[in-house]
Length: 387
Image (cartoon, rainbow, N blue to C red; front, side):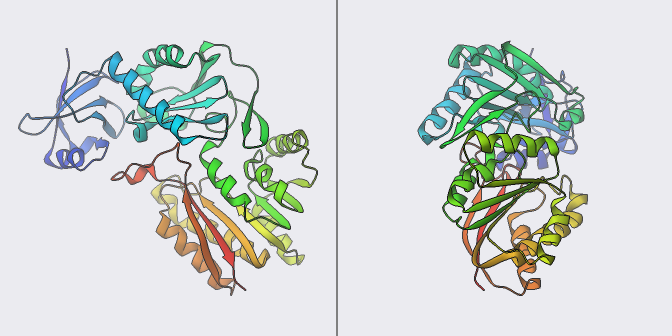
């Protein structure tokens, strides 16, 4: 029998305003099973929505539909078909992309990425975790993948009382999967790679950045080479920096696979290396800054701001006049306005002027929902140093 969860007037306002989350403080009553789909009611009992329920997380409700309709296999199939159809219309020039993006595809807390003939997913709440058998069956039916893997190892699952694990849900998952992004090919480890295997949300930013790169290029926090591999064909030479030996070794193999002989890879602390390059008088025509999230909570914002300013200041000092800075933040807690202010402050300290060539965000297969700022996490500025 379906459980009903009643929300406070403030919770009702959140639902009606288009947000997908209702917090524990805005739930006034009604128990339910962990991960169940529940009926959400206004204080007077009126129907508001159906939602995933969590008995552990501060996000108690994740809205699935504001229509009074059954949430059954037909419902989930329609959600998947809509997501698949949208990606087909994007005409993505890659074999790896996001197939379903949580709230952006009206399936909160579930992400599914396609890597060629394989699917990798993450269930980040009790509700989406409970849904996995149904989703696995539907994905096998609709797409006939060779394998489906659950990369359920993000720490956020602990907030839901869920364990962290990696498990093959269907078929067979090889040690590595070969994917193509434009003309570039590289291998992805679906069991151990970042996120579900790779950073797919930067795909379109990497392609956009390539058109501005000439001469000497510097790629910082390069990981396995997402930016470096796309930019190298347009550069005279490219230096890639990352602190992880595993990442730089993978990048070197990927560069060799694509016959990119102008890529020079160094394993180093990027903060230290930027200062060293400045002292040495090195100059570049393009610099990429794509660091990991510096602010994973509100409390970390001041330290994150300091970190972003430091690397942007150093990068601007290393740039030749007329050169391009591609600078990114994947920290949701650092808004676009905050990030822009940090870059401006860095330019002031570097005693240089910059112009904004492009303001970008995550790739189109990672849609942002209006009214839900939490879905806008990736900021990418392409800037030109004027003097």
